[in-house]
Image 1 (tube, rainbow, N blue to C red):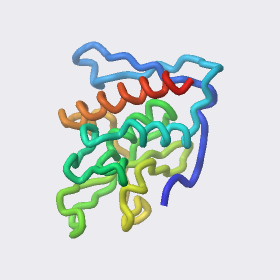
Image 2 (cartoon, one colour):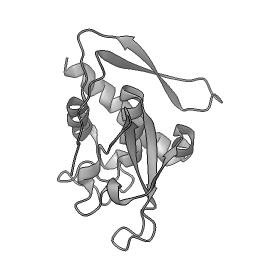
Image 3 (cartoon, rainbow, N blue to C red):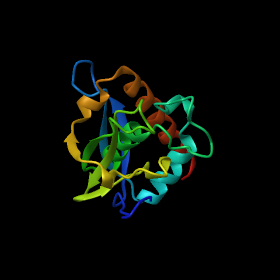
Length: 165
């Protein structure tokens, strides 16, 4: 498993800033042309793996360095959407006996292609086996812990992105 399609952000760099309270999203992205940066999906995934931790995982007790993307589907998909655009897709995992505490898995649809940046967290499950429906950012960020983990991952990503220039 893993990425099946690699794209780039066409030289656009993501600049993040918080929105004012009550605006719907916890954060917003503004795209600003940065000719020194050509963020592609491989580079995005490399940085995500570096900054992901138990603090940004849905399941901090299950997270480990050998599986750095464990429990990161929501927060990684949200960040990928901010950088690459597209839609968020949510599929139900309810009823899966191996993962009884996980209700869903989230991935991206970018340029009409499904891309699961966190696919390698599962060795026996693929988004292709799930029925996905388009989901809004608000519905995913509606959970306070998801919002906290997303903000922390985004902060770390921006810091790592700046230091890799």
